[in-house]
Length: 387
Ligand code: PLP
Image (cartoon, rainbow, N blue to C red; front, side, top):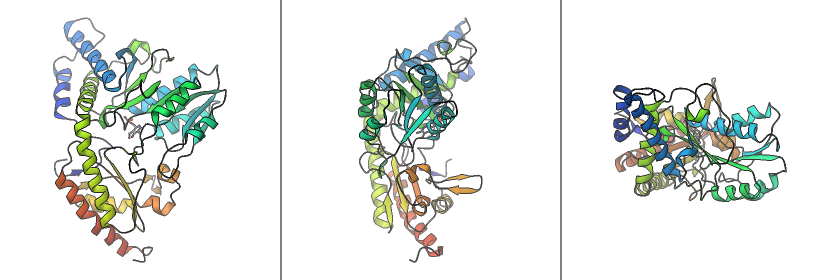
């Protein structure tokens, strides 16, 4: 997308040159099946194991605790369904929040149809769950707590280590969807008391269609895809070798560059956030100002539709995202913004700008300069605005 100013890094990211270069030999030269016995196959097998080490190191895990998947979504499905199956003997109660990604929410809904009870904890106006609510929701039959590390829409970062400590003290498995956090925050499964964690390559300049599930040794993990003996017989199917290699390199690079890179990403984020709030009247920040992903700008504007802002930004060559999801022709406000207690009209007027590794000062300046006139133009056309 050479002519696009890309501010949608929470949706997906550009594959970095280093990742691309690391992947290509496994498509063109060392394309052997890792389960075969000859040299080209051994090379592929070794590359998968190296990637396992790289992913493990990026989150403070052991390589044997990493299982590759086809996406972050698959990792969360696997974590939640396997915990439900494995610990059913102890109970049938799961705790999550009402503003998780659909990968978690819809898996919990699926389990509700199969005899599980799910408590959906509310969040406050910043998107934070309360530890008191969490403790009060725990029952003797609670087997799993699944709370996301950082929210993809509004960027709120939970107090994960404290949630993990509550889960551990009550002998309950703690899973976290860390798809937006890994590579952006110093995630450490040991310090954060995490039993299971989902991550995805394409949010950290790796390829799409590959993710990983971390499972602490000692936690039960039944097979999710039945067939061959790949991934210790737990997830059958010939490995996506190039994708896995890409994930490994992306995870390593993100971990190595994190401190320096996130300082710059955070600076651009704050510049955009302050620039918008200062230049656009009746605009508000969504989420928490400090407990926030380094690259997340989420704001809502009164009297306008987020979708219209996106279309006008697109005409200016800027790609961003709104908090709304357009489902089969009807525009539903995002469940995340509704969970914050936002009225419908406000939730419809939301914009998410997600800053990443390749964004520049000039791009931030251009975005700030365009937003004000766009919002004003839309308000001028809106019968609701009164401005
Ligand atoms: N969880 C969160 C918080 C996400 O932001 C996303 C992607 O948007 C996912 C899960 C899904 O990841 P994947 O696209 O790898 O399935």
